[in-house]
Length: 341
Image (cartoon, rainbow, N blue to C red; front, side):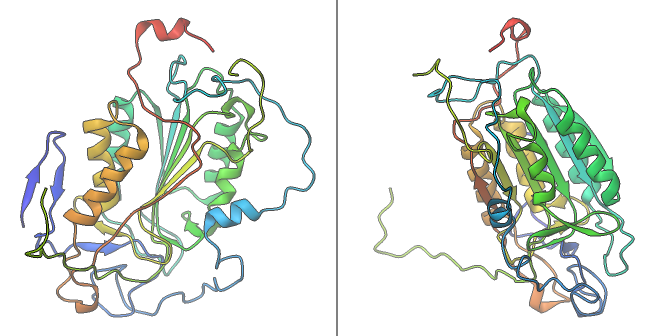
């Protein structure tokens, strides 16, 4: 196995790896006994009928088409100037970061997610380095998960820059699993929309989802160099959409597997933690996530020779952004506590 250590000190698995501990984060099994992906025998979706019209939509589409009825005229405190280029990251606190880490499940078809604790520990460490107040929750049932989400949404975030939620679990398109059952991702996001959480209105709301979004595989394509290739009114009040300022980063695109190594963690979380540690206070979040996508796309390839149909597969993250400004986790300084906007 070819492994290198970058400047962050996190081991990065290269595409030349020979480690056979690559698994997917699908909610079922691979259908072939002894496989290297979601594990075990039995077919997909047994006991899980997700073929409703709502499940065919992506989670963002579900969020956007959800009916709210006639909304009252909500208002919230303006956290930054109307045409500011960057988000105001000079509040007293960076904000909450909630990590929901799912390793073991009560649903019979769900295999344990070996390696997820590595993801959780690495993510918590780098988020603390970025000044987040990190809270981690292990193997929550849905009722408890929603209680933690509701508690966070009900807090006063006036002195916070933003909020971040990370979910590490099994999933399927539009759905993700708690310890005991599945739920739609928009059940979480809607708690933090501008009308439901006014103290976060106009502030970044970041969601990182490590989970499969389907059972399709990406075999990739070999890139070869061709011989012909050349080298070489700001103080006035204003209205914003209730769903503005969200960013949702999925580990994979809709319909596809998401891969996780049983010893080093998921490809997406490894890459995200490396980039946040190396460039989290230097690059804006969209540039940083572009490099996360590059790491996943270029440096990783599944190694499951005992299951040929899963062998040498690729993955690409999917970033959905409703951000309206540049987001950069600038350094907190001693004077930040007296700078209020």
